[in-house]
Length: 133
Ligand SMILES: [Zn+2]
Image (cartoon, rainbow, N blue to C red):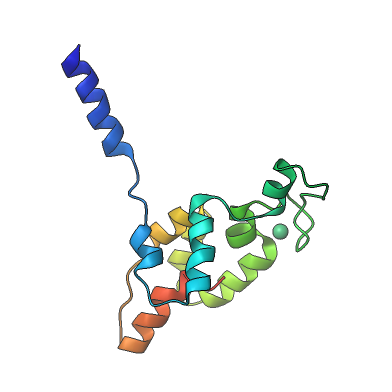
């Protein structure tokens, strides 16, 4: 029984996603941007859905597209207006743009982001592009 429980625990640990703490706090982004990203990764950003769930008497529908409820992933990844911005930012990176449609969270998006390449400025811009929202 001990071995069975130990195997289950080991499998459970292996399935956990490593939380991208360093992707927020070990950057040279301004502290207010780090804080916003931290709340995004924790799922604590005050979107309309979250405000409604805490009792606010507001409409949860996204005011940008007026199509779907304003969740974190909708507001920062999948809203039609946000997708236009991502499309412009990733115009030369179609693979990343396609990947955007397959992620469900900002955390997944950051984890999927490839490391920068090219000259120092290009690498720095590329590294910070997912924070550009
Ligand atoms: Zn929207």
